[in-house]
Image (spheres, rainbow, N blue to C red):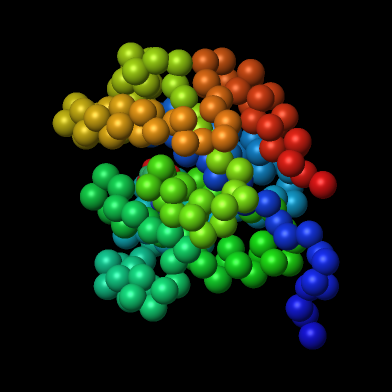
Length: 193
Ligand code: 5GP
C-alpha cells in the first residue's frame, strides 16, 4: 500500500505567473536549482516546440485532438488558451505528488492560476512584474524572436495580465535579476518545511 499516512503534510503548490518577457523562466530555473526537491509541473501544450525545447522536459507537446480529449476526460487540473495555443496542467500529476508531500512549481498564466486556486485554495501564488512596460517591450525586441505584430499581441496580453497581479499573494518586480532571484528564493523558502 502506497497511500500516505492520513496526518502526512501535503505538498505546497507554488504558482508562478508573469507576462512573457518578465524573466519568469530564469527565475523558475533558479528556484529548481536551489530547491532541488521541488517538482516542476510539465504542462501539455499544442504549441510547436522552440529550437531548444525538449518534449517531456519543457512541455509535453501534443496535438489539438489529444489536448481536447484530455479536457473532455477531466485530465487537466486547469487549462487555458494563451497566444492562440492550448496549455494545461495534469490533474493526476498534481494530485499524486501533492498527496505524497512533494512541493510543486507551476509556471502558468493568470487564467490557469485562478483555476488552480479554486481547486487547491492553499496554493501559493507569485506574480513576476517587469520593471516597466517599456522595459518589457525592449526585452522582447532584443530577444529577436518575434515580429513586431507578435510583440504587439504579447504586450497587450502583458498589460492585461499585470492588472490582475493583486490576485496574487506575492508580487516580485524583476528589476535586477539577482535581487529578484534572492526575493523569490526567500518567499518560497518561507513555506518549506
Ligand atoms: P510559452 O509558450 O512562452 O512557453 O508560454 C506562454 C504562456 O503560457 C506563459 O505565460 C506560461 O506561463 C503559460 N503556460 C505554460 N504552461 C501552462 C499551463 O499548463 N497552463 C496555463 N494556463 N498556462 C500555461
